[in-house]
Every structure is written in C-alpha cells, then in structure tokens.
Image (cartoon, rainbow, N blue to C red):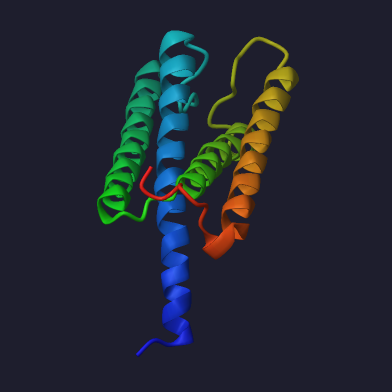
Length: 165
C-alpha cells in the first residue's frame, strides 16, 4: 500500500542520492585540486598557517585525508547508483557543482576571512585573489542550481536518456 509519504520519500531518494554522490565527489575534487596545486606545487599556503612548518604539513595531511574520504565515498555512491540503474546525470553534475562551489566558497569566506586558517597567498595584494576565488566558486554554485532546476523540471523529474549513463 503506497502513501503520499512513501511517494515523497522515493522522490527525495532519486533526487538526493545522485546529488549527494556528486556533492561528495565535488568536495573531494576541490580539496584534491587545492591541496595539490596550492599547497604542494605552488607552496602558496598550508591548510593551517598559524603554527610551525611541521604543523602546516600535518594539517595538509589531515585535509588531504578528509578530501580523499569525500572523493572515495562519493564514488562508491556513484557506483551504487549505476548498479541499481538509478543514476541521473544532470542531478549528479548539479551535486558536483554544489559540492565543489560550496566547498570553495566556504574556504574563501570562512577559512580565509573569518577563521584566518590561511590566505590564498602571502606577501601580495590579496583582494584580487579573494575576489577571483569567491566569484569562481559562486559561478560554480549557480551552474549547479541551473542544472538542478532543469533536472527537476524535466518530465517525471528525470531527463530522458540520462538514467544509466
């Protein structure tokens, strides 16, 4: 016997699972790019620049671990969606943009400006870096919202041909 509550639960599941998987992969990808490019290759900052060099390296390792856990978890959910035949590409990419852009905006506002864990760079004029960082993050989030709205408005909430891809 199906009820309205069951119907809403199924609707939330088909929307939230691909969005959640994409968001975890988006956070993991953003963390990977940030850690690899800005921390290791360019040496612009560490996750926490308030202590010694050793403390900065440990904080980078913990940050890398957290990002990797998000990435692996999101990919396991992705594989499960594919296995069940419930993968929805537009919703997954919307989630990816939510996770990626949301992480970068959180990093740029909370970690850089409120908590002062680190800055993007040191010994330079910061505002061009801050504006660029946060504008790119906001654009990625907007793309996510557009993708999500399109996916939800499609017939039956799904876009034809997008399942199982």
